[in-house]
Length: 74
Image (cartoon, rainbow, N blue to C red; front, side, top):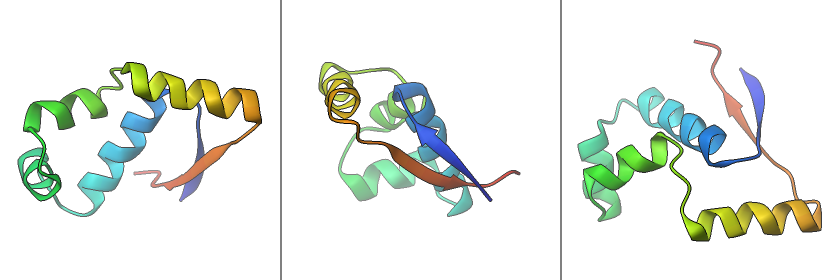
């Protein structure tokens, strides 16, 4: 395991994809559990920024908040 600093939507998407795969979930299964479309899961994992997500990253930069996630080296 290593730590990934989450600094933008692309990094977040990759971390979330890795976590989903480590749990053995398909995109469809995750979408059903979350009550969202599979397409939305795809967009998140591809790191497609939304206005709300970009605002969160702006907020983090302005306030000095740093997020890290443990990710597999696999």
